[in-house]
Image (cartoon, rainbow, N blue to C red):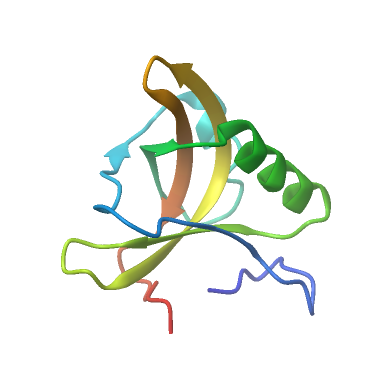
Length: 117
């Protein structure tokens, strides 16, 4: 999935869910989150929570990619086990008793093919 504003030759950063079920996405309409999606066309903004062993490291990978104008993509299995991708536009981590939880805000277009081929 290549964005129109992506510099030529830039490689996206991938956050990959390797095992377990894919994330459950929910619509998200907070003003601050919508402000990162500038453009003429509205693309759905959704949020998901992902358990991880190193939330801080994953957020830093996102920040480094964004700082160098590279997109960050969430690579995950859908309900059928097929690989899908969504662009991560914001991320933060939270430490809970069971470990780290990564909060991801992603944008997806329902008419866009986001498979991993």
